[in-house]
Amino acid sequence: MFTPVLFTDLPRTDVKTRFDEALVEHAVEPAALPDTLATHRRNIEGLRGDLAAFGTDVDRTRLGRELHRLGTAASLAGDHAAARAALDEAVVHFERLERPLATWWVRARRAWAIERAGQPRVASTALTALLDEATDVHLKAYGEAVYRWRARAWLAAGDLGAAREDLETAIDIVRDRPRPTGLDALVDALHHLGRSTVR
Image (cartoon, rainbow, N blue to C red; front, side, top):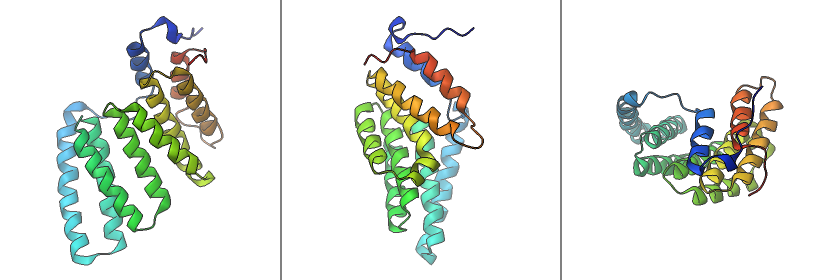
């Protein structure tokens, strides 16, 4: 029988470590990150050339997606300045394309990267603003991830009650899906936060 670990029983850093271990989002070998980053940068150089030469929406979309991938990988590698620059540029491209859902998602990824850069309160504020403007379409597509990311930001800021509430919301979103993949990891992370809602 599983016994929940109460957050009051562990130092805050240990709670966050166990929470993160329960939600391994990006299965990336650290040794592979330099090659991954180099590949994204080469791709972006080529895509910039395509956009300059042809200027189509398809070229801009491909560049925005690759910048998003670069920003994610750079954040995982700890290069927070590069992550922010890539994600900022990706937002600009998707805004120019008038792709509101893609823009919203990349803005959420940018907030995720901000939290990883050590600014959890800035990240939680940004994610709250995004959730406030979200429609059912946004939440159906990406709500689970964004609530999960805000839970991580709340946890890093020491607000364990808010982190728990966001995880519960993420779990509800996943349960409503026809194929609720990732549910076990969310439930496990929730158990690691314990059952108290004291903030």
